Image (cartoon, rainbow, N blue to C red; front, side):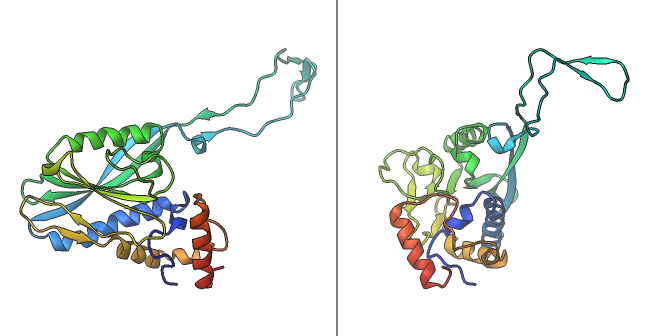
Length: 261
């Protein structure tokens, strides 16, 4: 089945699907750029690793058990021996289990010197909510913005707090930031909503060099097809991530028109 939305597919934001979408999108962008950047540049897939314990889904525990009220109990395996029961019964609780998180991103590097020219980030849910994930990403983001490296930041998630920029007072569903090192603090923000086509964005390289145009919409549609997401997504239900009343009415009409509802 063809990709059903004109822009971002909100169903791909589902926490169960997004890790796969994120990984495939990183590879798709790299595969698209690599042959066009030869022989001067190459695209490296890198990983950021950190530990987090902040999410409820990382907590594990055991089900509540029924505790007898008697002060003593008899151990059936050891005859005639009384086993003391504490006067205060403990509560069953859960403890945070550390999780090692690996997030992929792209680096456009110069052949020969391996100098990083441009970093391309596709944000994850952990980057957009308070905790270790956001802290780790913000630290790296500030380091890039204070360097001579360009930054492309792709935010295809409506949930969470957008990354900080100044001069944007609009509330948009999605954003692509293109920050050229030579123009900072000025940067280009491509802000768009659920009902819009994902805008193509230019990939900044060295000053004076022609910039490639990245058609993110086509790349995402290709991922949707190759991963057979149409077999996984149930369009008869609302997406996991909430949407506005206007978007809900629009999406319902669109999906009905396409015979998905």
